[in-house]
Image (cartoon, rainbow, N blue to C red; front, side, top):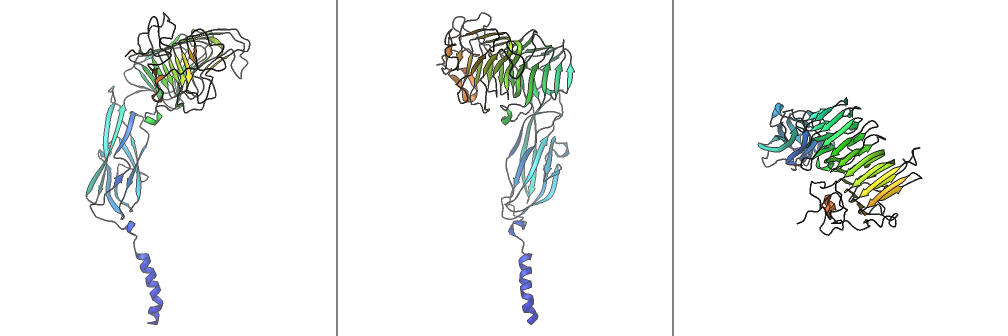
Length: 459
């Protein structure tokens, strides 16, 4: 009896430790089912042979007690284009996984789509199947994939990029001096981080109002569509000449167009939309640039700049910043006879800024126009524009310019910079015989056209 008294506390202690917590007790109740962070794991366009980003699915056990997941498997098994990593183990199947009550596990999902040669988005679907206590639950997997031309680092001669399927830039592509790269109307060019198109020859982008050429970053998720700096952009080098870029959308770059070919045949940019550049939309160095019917918006530094002198024409264009998440420290439109930080100064500048809008929502700047001369010869025609300026309001308050009046765009929150019915731009432009249509191919009035890239549609 005496020994029993001494042993009793030990028995009590052992009984406490031998009790299994409820969340570790496995239930076979068929009502104990799983829940998921999503019922569908959706991948946007995924380029074949390149795989995809990794998506994450969280699997919950909402029950007080543990459950045993008999198996987790892909519907397509080993033939599926999808890959799973389940609790850190890469495998298309996992068996007898125990999940404690109120606990969860993660599944990482990737997809690889084999080339098919079919020139259209293709739907690739599968599902992840979970068997628990006799229940079968599914999470759908959906991806859109497409075959593409892939361009690794290379110096190329005269060639044409067709519009039959997308082009993906994986690295630096250099167009050699004397060579011509022609990009067909309707072509789509997607670039990976650090990729850049260098042009030391001639670039001909042959988009139309109906079939535009698109340059953008490689990532296709919604959150990346307006993200800047995803690739380096297009750079026109010293030997390049006679470039023509028509009806192209250029976005997600560091620089949209960076042009430095002094003394060479100029670059024409017509009907383009250049947007979401980390630094500049168009920046030219002692170069000849003609910009017509072009929209440039939401860049981190300059929308348009011509530095170190040069010949610059900007006609019927809209250069604006609205709801721009990047904190700018420079006006949207800058032309100077010098290049800051260099010995290039006192150069000759010829500027023609006509029928254009340079404006912003005003959170960063009251002055969106900067014309600078340190002694160089400057010839400028600045007429029939809508400009946001305080510094030059006396100098530019003539020749049909409209200063510091809201242009009234259709919807700046939706990045729609066509003109509202009450816009002061309506009918305020100077007719230019060599510009008969706008950025969308809409005919311009021959007597009272509208200022900016968009001719207002009459309801």
